[in-house]
Image (cartoon, rainbow, N blue to C red; front, side, top):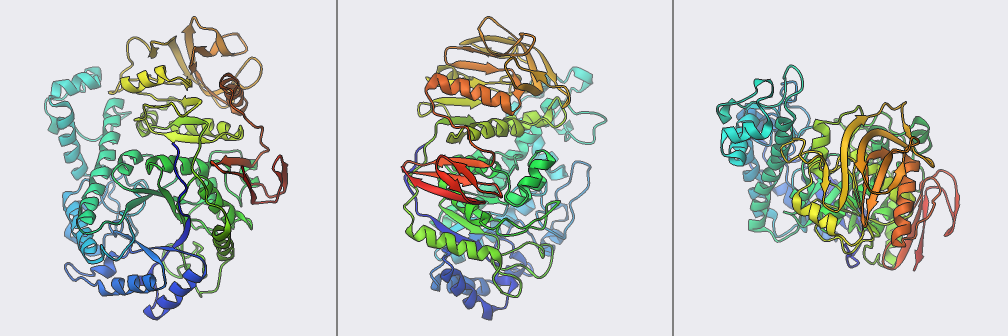
Length: 636
């Protein structure tokens, strides 16, 4: 994907309902003087907007928007449906989501609703319509809800979800016998006579049928999209402003591409230090070395992912400016990192970077979450770096367009299939794709993450598509016919759409004669060595093929084979293994790679090259010496 250069701006998240009104003008003035343009408000304010049913109190919000606009700030207004007030729960006591153990999620924090509850859907429609009608002409952008999926709230096992799932299944399969056949319900006498007999795949004695579990994950994703569409429908009746949703890091239990197709902008919430502690899988010494800088690839992966979700238009809606409150450990960023994180987002094509939050809250659950100001309104450390970025943006040349050497396919449906049947402890589709992404970044390559609906790969020298458990026929054809090198596997086409092992055995490719004859997952202390260096780790398939091996294990068994432009890798490799595979591909397509120092990454645009040093020490590179937690921008 190539995109024209876009204006770059900074912003923040603000909660006028948390502060006396006499402070709003000073806050707005200080935001503008600090170089901020955008301000998101309102996403948690329902109890102040409607303290009792039908008692609308909107004047304070109108005043806040007026003050911000008069200061030259643009407002993103969030719909408040992530935090329904107590009276909404009292009105609809069965609207609460239910966890996998059958326990209702209680009132007292946030995201306490089930996407399938019809009564709450209508409450969401109503409050969204009220806000859109009142403020549709005075705000510059919208955000629906807040962080769908946060706190494991996409999948709900409520009665409302069960009823909606039964209807979804009937619409999908039409006939109960068709469902029984598709799911293989003859196994363990799981056959149904009617759709209303089908429960949810939880609280079973042992594992539920994987076809049942995968269907429920697909249904749950569809429910998020339908819930979101209700809000879009109401906003668009009264406003022409673009609409977004703020996604999260490594929250994969609904299809972000599907939601993104309905909106103009994708945004996401970037917390590099929290993610390193809470979500990045790495050795303790790695986490120690990067505890105050974050992982060099995790943020970039999501920048590239949400550029795809937003079809080129994306922001960071919440950028960490200091210690957070929710990770196992919450260190302060190394000086320079707030600036580095901001510029890395712009290098990947972000239109805006907004910092969470303007002022640290002195009360409730997020007291320990830093802001740009401390609770007493004194300046926190992050604000100085934000001002530096604002000054640099004012004089820096425009970041001109995205360019990519390779495409990396990421598919939410494959993530659900792996989650239903990982076959080994700690194995996940997300982890597999991220491992390949890291290797591509270590080689200094630019990457486009693309969705499974992509059919045109003509812009790329290579495509990597690991682990696509179900491979639709038209995507299979597009990959086989691509003119660039295409690297598939492992687990490619391992299941039909209803989670059955297909015949012929996978991956069943016309252009590559390879058959997976056995599958094993490997203990972490039992890697399989590759001839020439590197290892298969975690996952290894035994394959039969007449093609010459590209990689072999130390016993001479093929691990990767190739015919023409199509390559199949039958293993999850370690870093050295991935690096070898990528060097093989790069040599075939005349693609220039680099061997970057640990913690150093490169990003090219059409007119610039950015070098980022995530290390706590200076590093010498071909672009020159890069200071700790800093960057160099070169004009090409």
